[in-house]
Image (cartoon, rainbow, N blue to C red):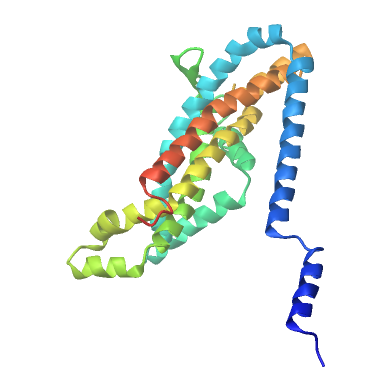
Length: 287
């Protein structure tokens, strides 16, 4: 009536010949990866050999070093403020007080729901317009380390906008980290006589920080890249320097190389730092 077991196995073997096995998937993935890498490396080599003016690169490199220092100052100040404010926003998001929860939720929805560029314009153009013409009190800057660091309205706008925007994302990461802590942790702490504030500070937040660390670290990397938007408010950052050189020299690829190097000089160490902190927190190891 039916095929023997050997005949069934033989049919399966024949049918498997037309299917992708694990080994074939690995080989296809390897081939695609090598081909992609070869294309990227070849393109970079072509640009470096044929389209980069190394005399110009050397002459404009100091301008990118100054822009690097400016961006680094903005990133350091904004990151500290964004993480600090973000923790408070995250606590507000899990607060049992209705008013606090509503304010924190509205804050997150606004700053996550509108573009950072829009928020920059609100601060940079909108706030000075609240004063009569010429009456805005921040009319000049303070040269802390000229010409690298001048604290003027563009610098203040950059720090405030990046802080407010990224605090919303950090707050959501903190909220998720707190929610990931088993509820029994809080109940156990309260049963031992600890107050709600002490329980959050001593028991919940350390665990929530570990849970949220990867998301917060990734957001700080995004913050670095978001500084490229500061060119629209005439802040002399990396992209602004690129645009000036490209306009004057009609050479795109030479400053592009320096743009890539400058951003990677910030983001790569930052990503390494995040990885180090994750390892210290034994992220994902379970022990």
